[in-house]
Length: 214
Image 1 (cartoon, rainbow, N blue to C red):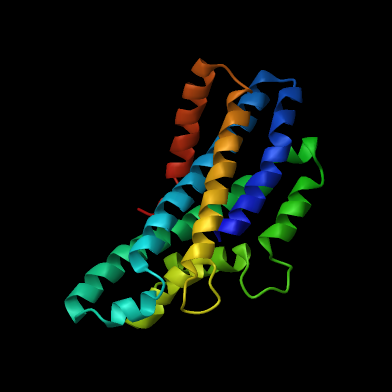
Image 2 (cartoon, one colour):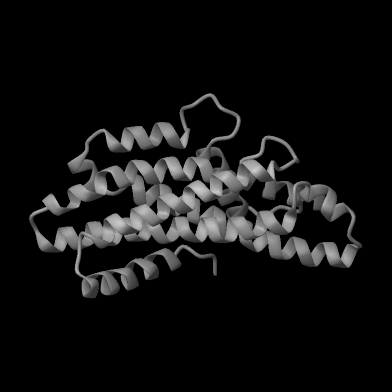
């Protein structure tokens, strides 16, 4: 998931500078809020995702199976809450990015390139579209999974094709995504004054928070 998110962020970032070409002030503001919302959703994804992977370890299913019943229920409840938030964030990200009309006007091919990267039309086992859909529908249709099945959602979120997480690979992907987030934030800060950035960041953070499960 983290590698695919970095690819999406880098594509969006390549067009952010062009927001300055938008003539109308209100439209330019909305475009900045839109890309800042993307930033906050991605930052929340990587922050909670990294913490969850660190807690779950390389073998989340086996780690759960080693716990007594009560402790396993407590841990899985915590993991499940994160998984549900991640599903909502990934769903919201797709809507924010693919529905960002300002970016499509500036770069008509951007949405198509992002759609291809997300993977809804690609013949790959693990795609961002597939991960996001699985996690999102877990919110809509909660089912009585076994403990092992619930633990497997951690591996799914991390982009693993099986039950084992390659922590070195995931760490590299997270580091790359964090680097891109920092660069993205710097680009956005050059579009507006410090005062505007604070005001628009508050609005973007509110939008991002709207997608958290109640």
